[in-house]
Length: 430
Image (cartoon, rainbow, N blue to C red):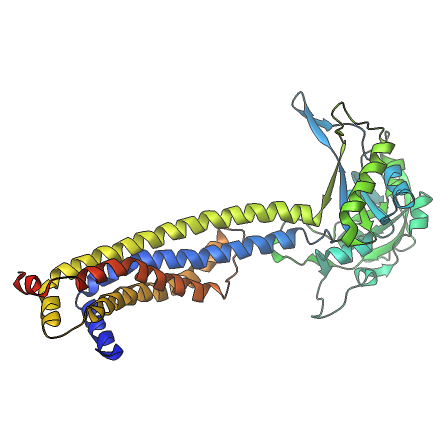
């Protein structure tokens, strides 16, 4: 028989019982749809991880104080990271080019009769550079393709310099909403405000900003901000030396591991950390790089993907078993037909191909419907994964190939069983 004749015969065999064929396809449909959705969720999880930690560049090391639990309270495990730790780091650590530091406090800002409770963020003079590289916020109505610079984030005035940070200058830069709340339509530049009981000169106002990630625009308003030199914040609002967050910038990202070792050595020396009897250090600080964070998050995302893949495989196996079961029933029902074909000269190969093609047609039909269902289910999958589910184009041919493989794998045994029937016994079968 020619391939066209085999295909027509197989189509007639499948369409002879449409309801049974449709129910048999169901397992394949669910399995293939699961493969599409699983890959979309995996891609979405990876994209979410990349977006969440985009602020940490490839050449940055985030340094934070190690915390421990004591009597159900969260306390520092040793010495805190201080402003001086970060200040001296570039001069004492060879591979560190510069550091950014930050610390926060809650204050009451006042100008005239206007009073505002607001968080203040103590930062270094390069804070706007870090905002640009992080890419988390952008000016409202930013044009596509517009290259952002620190100046793009300033509506008026300027940001304070590292020299002013070293001098503990009582200056500040306001977010657009904070400026509007305190000054209304008046120009705040050069004006003096009271922050708690301290005088502070306004030297800049940021432009109106928004989060790049639209899902974060309901979390908080990035325009409610008050930036001051970190040294000034520590001097004005803290009685004791507070713990600061330090970000170290490495000169050569290819030497990141070496840079981390140098930073550890520097901080151990500053914090007087000695090795224990086994030669291990009990550090009171944590070093985190983008690679560390992404590695841990990607591992969790991969575990999640493997779980979904296992579910998809189970569905495909169940669908394959359904195909085998239906094909075995079909062989039994058509035993006499098979005997007639063999008696008039059909070869065993023709019988094998006919039943194998029927199994493949069922699995491919289920695969096509499964692909459609999987694509349609992506918005639902996204809603279950914080809006993150991205279709992987390669998953469509992969799902169809898997469907064909399932049809061949689970259809080969019924096809061989049909081909091995004895023609005489088959003709006698009732």
